[in-house]
Image (cartoon, rainbow, N blue to C red; front, side):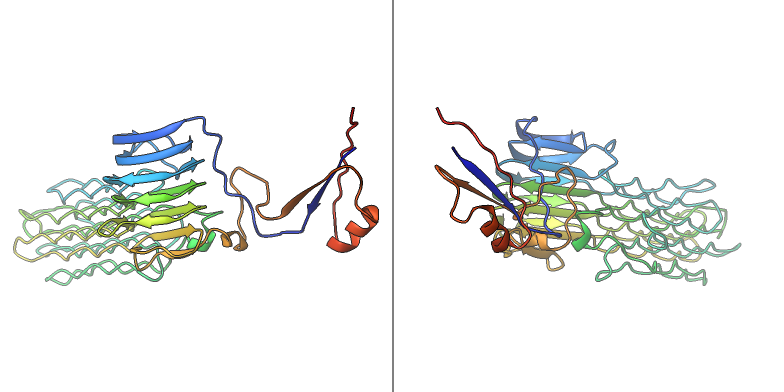
Length: 371
């Protein structure tokens, strides 16, 4: 007869990372738009010059039962804003695939519109339109990371103000388990009217969001990007409009039960997009501001990752569960259960000893007959 005692200790913070069921097999992804769905269940993962399809609008998650290899240039970048137009609106920078947010569009002979954002006051602010005979101000960059904020759009030479820096940031790395979001869009430049009505350059789109959870090592010998898009240039033939602001960088999370290795010369990128240049006719439009950097979090077995970006948050995957983790697809508590198999006979003292040893035990007795 056997007694199987499962001693379940209270553990209010640690939850399991989900490595998936492997239904997608060995994922070898290479080519434009090849990452065409939000969730992948891989036995192993290789990314080689792979991009996320723009139709994927939510965070991309790779659940990997084994090792991960990243080579070439792989991305979920925000789209670039269109340049300012004569007598027409400029098209906003397309949001980055995998959860980025769109830039603001330029409006003919009017203030630039604000970039899209998941929270209030984080999208880039539009530049001010120039009146008759003047140029427009530049739009500001979109915000994301409080430590690496966006910059303001500059004023036009004729005085129209640039868009101010957004006041809010969002999506802290410690909260990635519950909230992970792409970058906010940049603001559009103000319209100009030196010799005719024009729209400002559109804001760049924010970068997307990618997370890779691996029950094995992660090796990066290439680049993984979730950069913000560049703001469009101001119109420079008629109206001298302002340049658009850059989109904010997105979010990256790499989690490994082994080691994360970044080879020298390779990179993880969540950079803000650059601002567009103001157009010059008689007066010069303001330049767009730069988007804020995004957020990068790296968890591996020893909490040490060489060649990581300076703004990345790095911790140990062994203890990362101590930061109030909410599981996405699993309710099994990592490190909270200990299984002991006791054969032949019950342990001395019976279940009462176990009760006092673990303070608050849950004892499940599974009895099987031996023949």
